Image 1 (cartoon, helix red, strand yellow):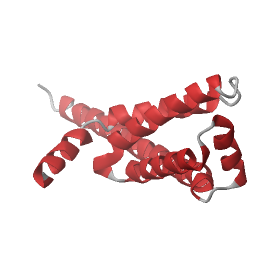
Image 2: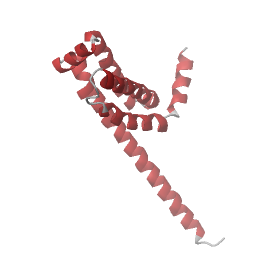
Image 3: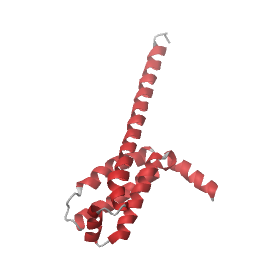
Length: 146
């Protein structure tokens, strides 16, 4: 081997490492943005029983109980997106919530705003998949507690 192959390998691995770091930072930024979205404009109106949220849940027939339950789930998911060991589980839970929101939008509200849960489902699935190795850490922690 010549001396010129060693720097090329080092440069290539540095480029891959830099790309990987940028991807991790971008994914973390996406998690923060989603956490802010699920906490502030989504969960807070439900938890404070804002009239806009109350009207929607009354129209669905879920009333205040359903509204508060969904608000708590959204807030818990938002917090979970920011806790490393909970990231994948939180993204999976929020994705399931978005599937339910899509079904509700289609069946109760005749498709009005049905695209919103689908748009949110894509990054949530990405986070759940890429952070799936944290599920092992979470299971290990839960087994120690039990």
